[in-house]
Length: 284
Image (tube, rainbow, N blue to C red; front, side, top):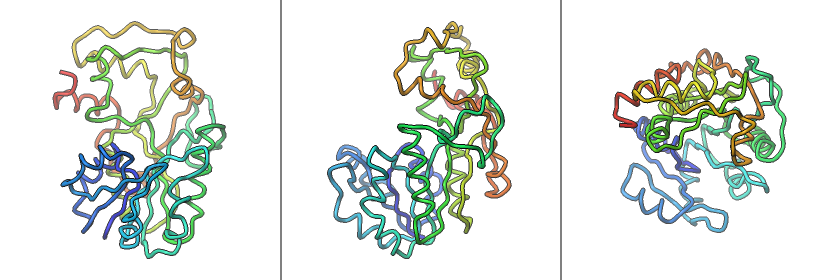
């Protein structure tokens, strides 16, 4: 299969590093010339696609692709990929489309367990994502799989490095839990989605929802240091975007991902993932 990617970001590049052998060719987009130049000579052909510019070669590479992976987020005016290439994608010979969404589409369920059928609601960025995901699932052509990703961590992006840098905070909101997923398990889920010939929605998260302050405390335990003191949510200085993550409180189930996509998690909990990262030298 020949793969085209809209958005060669952190998770997608990890997927390519792990599963490039599935594809005969890989090409995709980046937002800046600097990123394009950095990726030249890698396993994929980088092309520039931003709000004000699209490399003319994108249409040619997209036309030749058998599989499409989309990780570009929507904006206020909708999904930029569908706006620019929707008709071409609908008329293409693509066999599979995988769209990377987020569990942020769910409404607040007060810490209860939820699955893919749970109610969604929101405004702003959450509404943009809900509308974009719906547009991709309704797009004519190849079957689309939407993977709703939890909070992403992995090499170069984790609580160990935040502690080392002195930027980690143990913000405490009573009863609040979050869901997480190691980038290695995202790569496994994407690979499984391309292997399955079915459309639908799957949550991609690990087995253990938990309070965010516990993640920092466990990372500090691995490092043998005293964790930062707890800071009450109401007293914490946070950006509007950071504060918005606390607006929903859910325990998200990954049962369908395991049963229907057959994904076996490398890191079933943040403890497993952080311990492996520490073993590999992160945060030292």
